[in-house]
Length: 224
Ligand SMILES: [Fe+2]
Ligand SMILES: [Fe+2]
Image 1: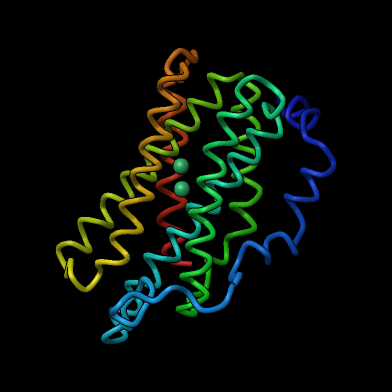
Image 2 (image 1 turned 45 degrees about the vertical axis):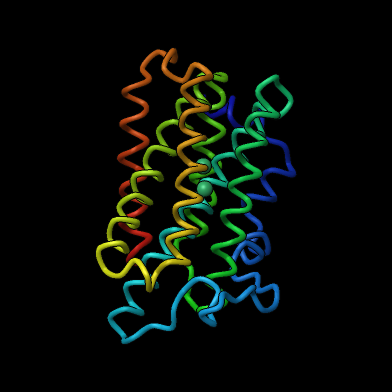
């Protein structure tokens, strides 16, 4: 199985996985001043105190890590299935993930929030998860998509609930971003189901295993 994964991955893909420059490029790409709302900030309000700063830093760090991991999963799927009939569908979802990551790159840079130290780990594990499930065929790739996107949607929903409980008006811009991305992730989840994810033998087992991994990644990325 592992040999088969390696056989499908080109030299270019490997340089993408292990290039420190690539990791650096994914982090903190500051592209000049962001569009400011009438409130005078783009997405995050200036923190009231150190407690709020820590809460928002952790929240944004894990969101950035999740979008980074999602990008690497779709990169792995494309390395295996890019030239198949499913390629354009995966590319379409990947393009949306690129926009999500770009937005969190901007938010982190603008607010001087450090990304998780584990990006190199999510870089490699994300790519290998995407590539290895894609080797099971289109259904394997879609099963992975269903599992990951369900986890990310639930994660965004819990953040939306937390921000709404705290102060929906204060976090209005951040809520807009998270709600929009949550809707995209739910669409990706539904796309996976529509494209036969559940017909993969052992679907529920694979889905549960991937979701345990996602929960662990979320827990760790919020802290490190
Ligand atoms: Fe995303
Ligand atoms: Fe997604």
